[in-house]
Image (cartoon, rainbow over all chains, first blue to last red; front, side):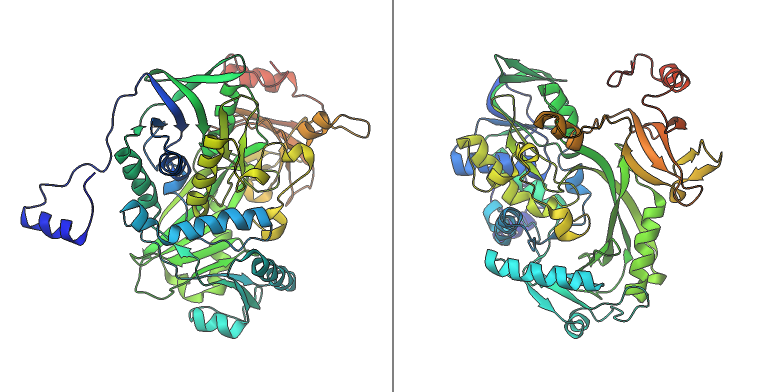
Length: 414
Length: 109
């Protein structure tokens, strides 16, 4: 792997950019790997990366049905924050946020992490109490957040309308080191670093079966033939249920569509991320100037990667009241992704009934922010059989009643 | 936009008139049931990529609950039917079989 640097840019400028090499190889699959990760999205690639970096397991393949980063990694609204109420959530999301801080240096790939700050608006009395509680919990967890009043919100977001008739802004939960990153670059950066370690990223290769002997995983069948492995990690978001069925167990998940949209690019007008959970809308401005808007899920099972128009209408209607200036904006693109939701709205990072097979899924509507922490914990779980980061997110928590109830903590999809 | 025919009032209701109510035909478990039964009843939804039976409420209309058979992969609707039943009626099963030969879902083969 050639190192990216200012010097490399200058060198290539002098020779008409003929020296750049492909960021990752596209090899044919080998007969056998120590570990196979299914799913080359952010979580899958991060898992592979930390398996190699932290545990020296480098004979790894990452198998992807479509193209790298083409699922939810390329479809989210790129928000990074860790202001969660429950301790296990705060731990893994804060680990991820911390890793994002110097991920560009670590990967030698500019992921454009922008710790511009995230405000979660309180627009009801209930939310005020909820976020003040979260701010206190975060103080105990070592997550830097604070409760701010409406004047400070207006200072941070001049385009906001504080006294909307239906949804007045009463304050907010402010995380100064939250922000955004370039979502594609996160996948590309991890892929390049994995490839440099000798890992194989195999795209356009669908897993069609999970092979097992005596209750232990021994490999997978794919559209490019059978591949043997010692350990298998299933990291496929919306299709977790289909993969787990192949492996012979079921997961407490339902797949629904989550939508986002972006406006035409405009001049810089908002340099923080604003989330309005009462009305299911959140907005940030991308580096290109587009207003990036996300909403709520459709609420019914859906595998089509397209959502319902009226949900967009609801989101935009509420945001227009809070940000009157966006009423004149034209929307350029709208899309959907398939998210896998658990009963307690927290992810599953766990061993499974099939020995040697691990699952990382159920991130629902909030997976992007967790990518580095999720990969870190999942790699530890796969390599050593135990990780303090993932312990609370095990599959048996549903049977044992140890929910990590973030649906209550956040009040909405997060 | 998803359009479902309400089997009670007969209206072709648009999605914004309806509220989704999750998987239909769940078998409910009460006191005395085992941990596994409770676990599956509470959390283990079918979540199929394909034919799905689900509960809907004509919320901004007649207010009645009904059932729908729908494909989660194509958003195609096979039909709607009364909620006062423990399994899909034969004509719904036939309509699905006509479009998805060989489909199966739980015991509704």
